[in-house]
Image (cartoon, rainbow, N blue to C red; front, top):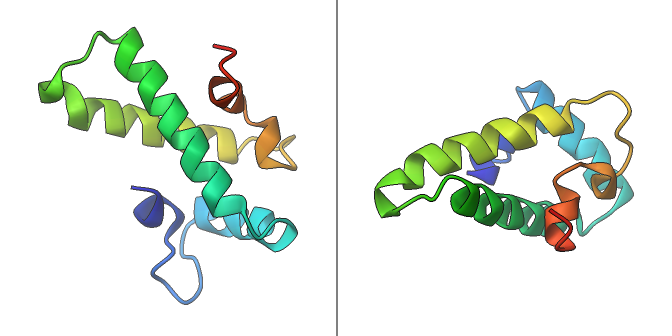
Length: 93
């Protein structure tokens, strides 16, 4: 999901989200690892909040992707640690 969302298979990102992520990656070589952890923590939070079952997996993933894209495109974000979903990684839901 992250590879598709960030358009990482392209030589040059074709999406605004992908281009935005490259800025984070240029500042922090571990940016993908951190975003992966944030995405997983967000997915877990949404899964529990939605009382999801395995039949809801696609809906939870779609919502996770939408939330991450929205947060990555916020103008005041300069580091991944500033994403509001980062709080889920710290256990501060």
